Image (tube, rainbow, N blue to C red):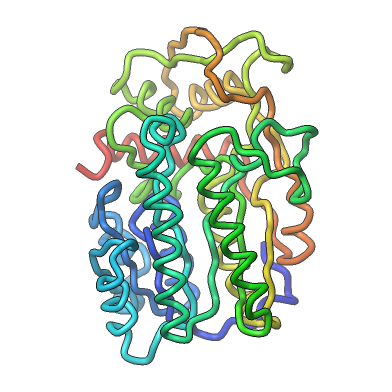
Length: 355
């Protein structure tokens, strides 16, 4: 749902970094259906070009030609220069998804995460500035809140990340704050702090396609349901929550994609600004509630075993999404039942992902 105050929707020429990934591909579809022209820039290291073929298929033959793609690395100025010059009439705005996102891997490879997430973002911003493009929607994360002092978590909560991934997101947000302060009459920036994106397009044609063992709960639960993995490990059964398992704010990826469209519309319609918003449902569900909902959606039993808590986890993380509702008129429209139904459609149709 999008508020009328931000519904001025000029057709824009958009660069979408990481646009073949999970959130990027669903957002690309929503933006394509809204009439925009898209250039997806992706290195395909953790994504598949097949996702973009399916986005074109879902958008239909009239819209498909408005989606172009190129392979490139956001750390490479020559690749970025080619992306900006590839658009004959320029780029109006950038939606920036490209980056690494596995918390555990970030602990093992912090320099790699700082290079890709922070240095890559710096290179992108320099290219944008050089080409007179000053409108950006940035894919941030609720991980930068660390252990929340209170829930639901407002945007004013302390920034206190507890792992390198969270630190890189906080660092890019600081870079964007500094950049906006240097030219407040030029830059239009939205930092969108996601909570837990899950689900898939209801067609089952695009969805989350993690390489190797999934790092996140939802794709792991889906893979157990489809028989690809034997059982789920639940990290901790003694949290201070109603059933003892961790509680998270799960947001359907299509709601999240629509949040990006709403943020872009707002930036294009309003004066230059720096906008920082949580994107979440404001509702928390436990691990076992997710398991039960997926069992209901799939008709399959999902075996699980309770194991020790995982270092760095919090008991509860739930968004206060009221600012997004107020500024964008955006609220989630889909609940856990929809998430599991659509996620199961994707998993059932694509048991090995895009392979």
